[in-house]
Length: 436
Image 1 (cartoon, rainbow, N blue to C red):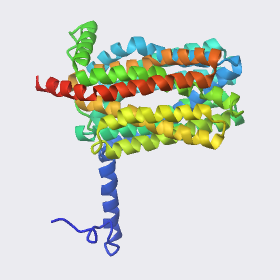
Image 2 (image 1 turned 90 degrees about the vertical axis):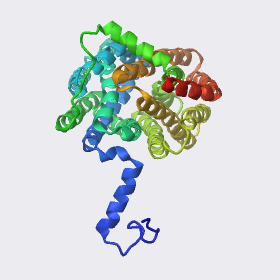
Image 3 (image 1 turned 135 degrees about the vertical axis):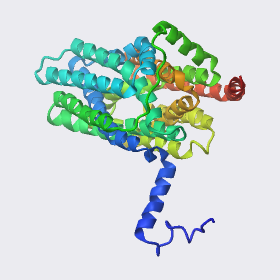
Image 4 (image 1 turned 120 degrees about the vertical axis):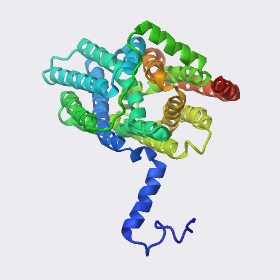
């Protein structure tokens, strides 16, 4: 029997409060089904705390490089050093993820990242830090992330049911981007009050939260990995072949390459814009990151709620076009409130598109290839970022930061229009592929 609106526990004030609460809880679980999983409920707060720490370090590191050298190009070089290993090591990382328990891998990678944060913090606090120390530690962290990121993406499929996977991926993006609201604001306060060294130490401490969350999880599936007798190079070849022959995965991977190079790199230049255009200090930089992150959170929540109701192409192509137009507006304004609005819209559009692309791949990939496909996806996404960081750093140094960002936005719009044009043929090829 279907209840009328008046009979619903949510709308009927004469129902017991506990029943009304259950109705609200049911609606929340309907909007965010990933939270039905007990392990995801444990994962979520630990990852939130850890990602806040990560953003604290990202902001503090960019600010420290700018203080040491005063060069926008050096800011791009350090950012490139942290993502470059992904380009070379992610495919091998995907093989490892498909063979060994993902929680064990994550415990090792999180512990290693924690150690590197403590080392950088000690160097900064003792005044011994140099640009080369920052580059080396950033490179080592990139090596860790080459294994950590595909393991984390694949691990989500183990802590939620398949029908909840899109929601889990969207909420994982919300963690990353929600921390952009809180982390940079904390970073700005810490840098102003205590210096960058303490910010790095705080990031190191934050890793304890996600490590404890991983250790507390129970009833994880017994993993049956790929046969270890297969040579790693053969495993990589099989993963690449599967990805290339899968029309939907191939299209998304090619498109994410454009986003990594020409869209996402704008984040690298925010310290330069904050200092040179708006005359902001570290606290102001935190506000720029925070507003962009707030838009990203809203974008991921919208994806989590409406991903089953709206064509994913709307989120992917439409989100990227919205991002590019808003970012062009951001580079043209000198009014800070207007700049905040444009950054909010840009964060909304870009992350709505990226989280939808990730969820689309995760929901279509064969479990046997999940680690390798996600490592390829992250290799392109994160591994191509150094190209974008160097490109935007070079153009900023010679033609201005605003011009550099606008060039990337134009390329992003053109790629999005091409994706819309080819969308029908991609769907046809995908359905033909599934029928084989």
